[in-house]
Length: 405
Image 1 (cartoon, rainbow, N blue to C red):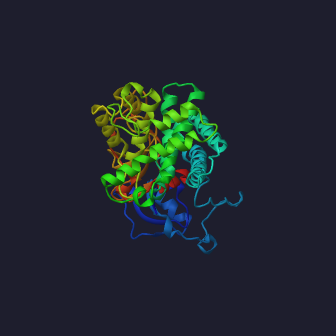
Image 2: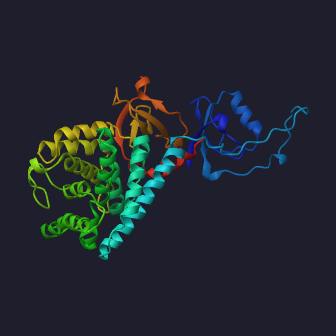
Image 3: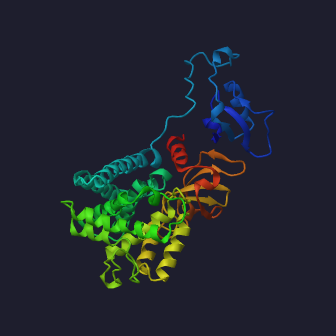
């Protein structure tokens, strides 16, 4: 992996590819391993500030075999720091770790629910109540962490991850609207279970890589009715949770399913989950399609609102809730770098807090400080992108950000 390092973080044994700062002032005779501290000190004396390091070619160097460097004898020799500095706690190695634990635990619970539903067994609601309450608490305290985590997705686990993500999005939206916490918990449960009926759909239709035929789509739509039946037969599910799941495919123009409910009978919570459900489906990778960047998904939501399928005012509120550039989304900056959005600026929504992590041309990971784009004038967002566009994946990005020095 190519990573740009400050000269202060460079250690003996690292493999240097090139000098990146200052550009075009000094060049290496050839790429190679840093054999001694003397070489590093020489680079510092030449005012070299950054080097491009290939971490896959690092070597362990025994400096005792190198010529001794003159040093004072009155002090004991300094211990050579490790090649990777001790990781300081940050957003990505502290809060994201906890959020991922909650997300993965939610997926495990979801898997058991689908198994029980498929075999006609009752759903165990205790773990569902526990994990959705934990997610709600996490979002009340720090919505950014789970928002970031739902951008890390696996194509082969869409069914599990979609239900968990819609529950997270619904909770975030409800918290943003300052809805009472007890109601938020019920909404989260309903969203968590909204697609449980999909387990009754044949795999050949559920995972078909091509467009469904009219008959196949008719079968697919029955999942909503199955979800309702399963939830009605499960003790401990509140009427509000059932309501949310029942309405997630209904449209304001009355052309939704399974009941074709007219607009006046679709509650605000039913309208909210429709938006969350469609947004997650649009931005998720599937076995048959790549997900859209979040900004593109927002434009599609607005188009559906113009067709009177979704509530226009709530779509605009949802976009404000998520931010023009949602936390966890990847953006390209004018400085020819990729950055991950780490926080919002409510007073300046097009200039969020970002954490650059990757430099384009030459392509390499780099260690950078967080930037509040509202405070700078020389670096703005060019566009919202997907990591896949650059042969990267979100797991790789989060891993790098969690362990950078």
